[in-house]
Image 1 (cartoon, rainbow, N blue to C red):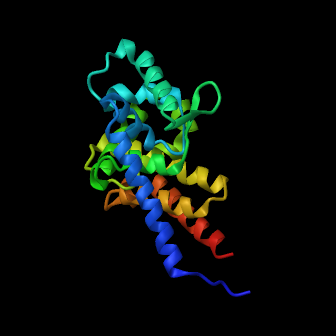
Image 2: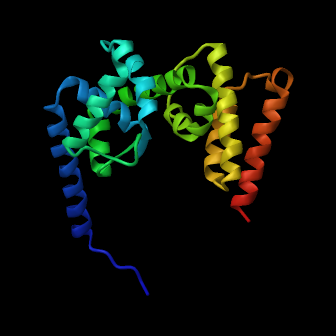
Length: 220
């Protein structure tokens, strides 16, 4: 059976999808600033997210929230987002977007360049604020926040990121997600020093070995 398609129908449906996102963006733009801030933050956390992650990140990403009141403020904002049908509950402490077009609209409140910077800042805040076990359990979400940024960072931060990309690449192999492994390992390699084989031989060998393993699995 041959595939057939109607270019006019595809264009029309794409236009409709774009129009829906624009309408939702207009709706979000009319919301209270704190709610807009919350929606922008959680739009970066994937299709679903934990309340505690939001509480951890919110005061660092948006000024003006009393740290002693952040739990109460976030709970009120999440409840408001649910009442306005942007989000829905998924258990006691987990939330998800009602539709992916709402998530896209929330993310598009700022420019693409600005959202890349925002995601990097959010990822770094989560690394610094979360306990190690929580970073591990949210590893892919955090790493994906950092991937597309070319932000300059200190040597100390670079080592933290290098360790994170290595862990993500290893975990991707465990899940047989070899394409993701290549992406994470290549990002890690980009952080290595020019004389990596003398300064960082162990991590260099691990990253290059992971890429070889992933490419082998992808071609067999």
